[in-house]
Structures are given as structure tokens and as C-alpha cells.
Image (cartoon, rainbow, N blue to C red; front, top):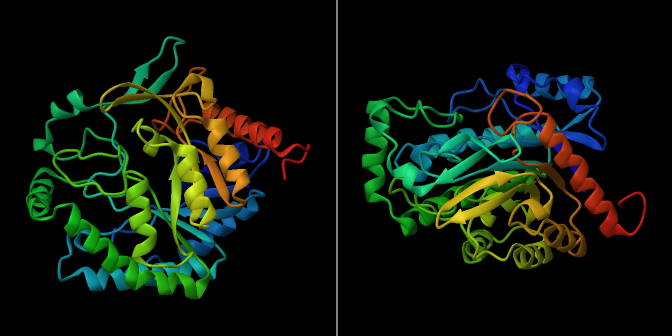
Length: 350
């Protein structure tokens, strides 16, 4: 297993020099943040990113992510042009030696929370979600009040997109995902790049939009769409763990044995009601994710890919990008490595 850390490029308030000081972290998870969604990523930009990471004594392990254009998810006629651009990005990412690309197929909204700074009993703040609060969010001004992703939409664009998705149910979205994967998996195979889809976060409908990567049955369907080791999964314990019906260790054993878990996001949360949760420190006892069970299943199925501590609280007076402060994620990285080492039975954690 390789311990990695998310870095948002030069605009990230956390410098690579600080990440380099986290014990055991050797890989960086990053992206190009100045390329419009749907455009092919420039090779020179990728070269600069990889070199910047190398100069810090780390290496670029995972690209997270190349956003999928909404026309692909909607199945519009323009999708073939955007798929070709996506394929070209894959070729260039593979050329610089990166071996994992994390992406998602969530319509319009990426990961979604209704509170970016819920105060916990210990005084820290954490990300939280409540379906009731979501129903009261006013989208008439666009996505400005929601977490920032690769794409932000003004009111008119968002209204048009939501209208277009009224014609897309879960089955249609599955068809559009299959079309996309059929086109790009052979390209990823040709450059040795593993595609790792991220589960929907949260794993249920929001704002009336379909979401399909939600549970074990969905992952079974996914890996059968294109039967290739390159068609893999980002196993996110927080996204999948938000649904208490998901047996995470069993899911790891199933898809780990198939060799389809390409990347791991380790995140803990506490389920506080139906479609309601808040995030917690990474150790298992603080939330509802059986972190020991998940890592044990990963070890037993031979996982040797990248893992990152996903989301952290804001602690010790830190301020920054919600979910992506330095301190709590650094604590998470050391906890996860300690747990991995303990499960290995030797000091090296191999």
C-alpha cells in the first residue's frame, strides 16, 4: 500500500514541503485545475505538475480527477467530441507515468454536504449532510452556496441542466456510463492507466437527480460493463459507508479478489439518521466505519495501490478548504499506516 495525500496545486494553502513531512506519505493526488471541463489536458501542464511534485521529494501517484462533461452523462450528440478529448487526456496522463485516474459519474453535483463546519463536541468542525437541510437549499442563484468543484453553474445554466436530466433516469445514466467506458477503457489499457470510479457521495438521489454508483450491486454491474482490470473502483469508505446497509469489508473482499480496487479513500463518519451523517476522526471507534475490517480485507486481498486519508476535521485553529486541512488528515495518514502495520505482523507494514 502506498500512502498518498491530496494536493490542490499552487493555490492550496498547504505546501508540498509540509506534506513531505508527514511520516510515510510518498505520493501526491492532484490534478490540473485550470483546464475547462471537457477540454483535453495539455502535456506541458502535466509535466509541470509532475516536476513540481518530484522537486518536493514526492511523486505524482494519482490524478483526481479529470471531470466528465455533462454532455457525456446526458448522452448528448456532442459527447463523442468530449470523449475523444477525455481519451487524449488519458494518453497524456499515462505518458507521464501516472497509473491511476479517479473520476466520478455524478450528474451536475459532485460530493455534497449541507454543513461545511459542523461544530463537534470536542470543538473541532466537520463536514455534515442532512437530507432535510438539502431540501431547503435554494438553487435559484446557481451553485454558489455549495462546495466548490471543477464546475460551477450560474442560475440559468443550472436550471437548463436540471431540466435536461428530467429525461435521464438511472437506466439511461447506466447506458451513458457504458458508452463512455466502452470508448475510454481501451485507451487506458494502451497506456497502463487504471480508471477508478468514485462512488456517489452521498449514495442516493439529491435534488431529484439519479445516482447509480451506490452499493455492492451497482459495483457488480459496473465491473461487468467493460470486463477489464482497468475498469476499476475508488473504494471510498465514507461515500459507501453513509448507507448503513453497505457491508464495507465484504465489499472489499468481493472486489479486491477481482482486482478491481485501484485506489482507496479512507474516511470515517457517524450516521445520525436516515440520509443524515457527519464526518469524524479516522479511527474506527469515532464513527460507524469499520476501518480495521476494511484494511484487513484490503490486506487479505493483496491491495498494493494508493490510499489517502479522505477529508478531515478542522482542528487546532486551522482554517482552509473544508475537509482538506493539513492537521487532521496528517493524523489520519499516520493512523492508517499504524493500523496497516499492525495488521501486517511486521515492523515494515509490508
